[in-house]
Amino acid sequence: MTAGILSSIHTPADVHALSAQQLRDLCFEIRTTLLDYGRKHGGHIGSNLGVVELTVALHRVFNSPHDRFIFDVSHQSYVHKMLTGRAEAYLDESRFGEVTGFTNPLESEHDSFVLGHTGTSISLACGLAKTRDMQRTATGESAIGNVIAIIGDGSLSSAIAFEGLNNAAEQGGNLIIIVNDNEMSIAEDFGGMYGQLAKLRASDGTAELNLFKAFGLDYRYVEQGNDVDTLVEVLNEVKGIDHPIVVHIHTTKGLGFDDGEESDNGSDGCNQTNPQPHAGKCEANHWQDPEASLGKPLDARKYYGEMAMASLERRFSNEPGLVVISPATPGSNGITRDFRERAGAHYVDTGITEEHAAAFAAGIAKAGGRPVLATSATFFQRTFDQLQQELALNHVPATLLIFGAGISGADNTHSGTFDMTMFANVPDVTCLAPASGEQMLDMLAWATGPSGHGVVAIRMPGEQILALERAADMAFDPLQRAEEHDPAVNIAGACPFARYQIVQPGRDVAILGLGNTMPLAAEITSALAENDEEHAAITATLVDALQYSTMDAELLAMLADGHRLVVTLEDGQLEGGWGEKVTAFYANSSNTKASHVRVLNFGAAKEFTDRVPLGELNERYGLTSETIVSRIRGILSE
Image 1 (cartoon, rainbow, N blue to C red):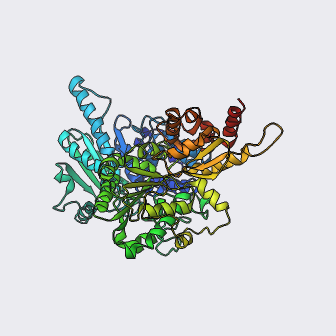
Image 2 (image 1 turned 90 degrees about the horizontal axis):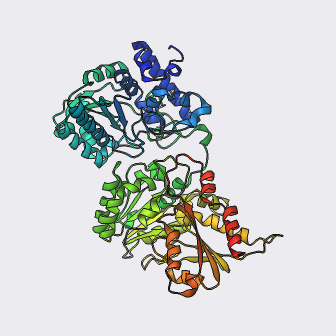
Image 3 (image 1 turned 180 degrees about the vertical axis):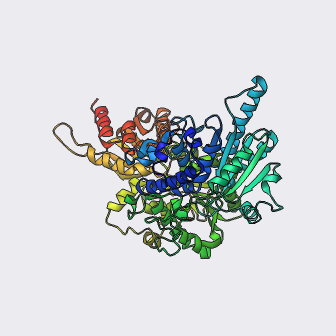
């Protein structure tokens, strides 16, 4: 192999200058780099390993940024970044954090969009191509050349992808849609169309049933999707095409990973610690954690997800209508492969179809079932219409488990900061925020029980709660906790969580914590109680709010008697959030005492943040014990 080719690639023009052999050597070097990067830094490694040859071929044939590439989800854009001046961010360990895990125009002119959600590439490509064609009609030229959408990794199951295919066929003009068929989503792919794709693969693209041709699109099949020479030849043939075409290529996700057939390092059979240079198609290689994280305890979403699933599994044999639904990404939320296999028909992976999953849940609930829809806060954003119409408007008893909610150091496409403003402002949705594993199990038992409620959204506990429980002297195994848990509430009655709970009574100031902020609320309460030379001790009232869909008017009014200050803490966006409603309650109260209560709200600003450390965000938002205690003491001393 010719050494150091990748480090010499600064623009796509450098790829054009390589010989055919150097092109193959470059692919090998990139694959080696990805494996090393994954071990040390982590990331979406499996999806990128599968598109090494495709991405090299794209940059060999086309001329970015004049020709536009739109990578669906864009978690498979690492190779694209390497070839567009960002290779050192993958080669030099000291620079690993310089680029995001998704395309971003702020990084490079070769990235058209910030993308982190699924299925949108074809629609975006249609928009670029439409404007290009309009410009050419008017002036004879455009800054945009070929438009290429690259979609795969299960993204084709998204409804918007089909909307894009339908529009592309009618729109016409140059549009190249590359379907990267790796036979995988994050886990397995699900849906009837994947059987048709299998028939296309088996027939070398000649099967009579062809969903792309059914849309009116031209079509080509490429079996050797990991052969750079073949891909260069095919892409040269479609370059400059005057009508939309689907190029269906068959690739191997995780190519280069150990396939782990004889490994016992996990239920999915993927050995992450010793990847070997051959195919490795397994769920674990979609996202690879760095070696430093191996052996760490479960993170909060997996821990509490496993606890929730174990609690539900106990009931499957007696409750045929109890169904867990995951629109892909099950493993991220503690829905393990073992659980899925044991659950059988009680578990449904709908693929990457959040909108369908929500409407599907509404159908199950309307028929008398008890659906539990589990996904990330950032992905629930896609279901807003179904949340309002199919679920809430129809008053169906569906339970929504919101994972990854709250302020975090995530990238700007996966923030969990905005969920409360969405869920809490839809009528007939009960929004619960547990502050412990036992509270979560109680809430889950009521939400999935016989009570005649409508939609219940449970904001699953985060790392703050997990850290507090980890430090406590208690049984910590999530399965054991679920097995030993008996609901401490009436699961057949009205919502037992509508009233806020006073954890500690006090005077002058009340600290209201919501969900993940309860550990901080307790810390503030303890800090205020300390007596030092400068400050007298303050015995604050500590309140666990439990829910954020309604105000506990009775308790809030009661706090007005003996409390001059009420402080609200939430790990979500302040504007439109829960704390502002507490402020409005007091401001609009006809009760003289209540109207004179001063309220301080602490939470996140309305902004997008990109990989800002959580500690830095908490400092920015004033969500620290020191800042809040100082504010409280200052006000009470006035």
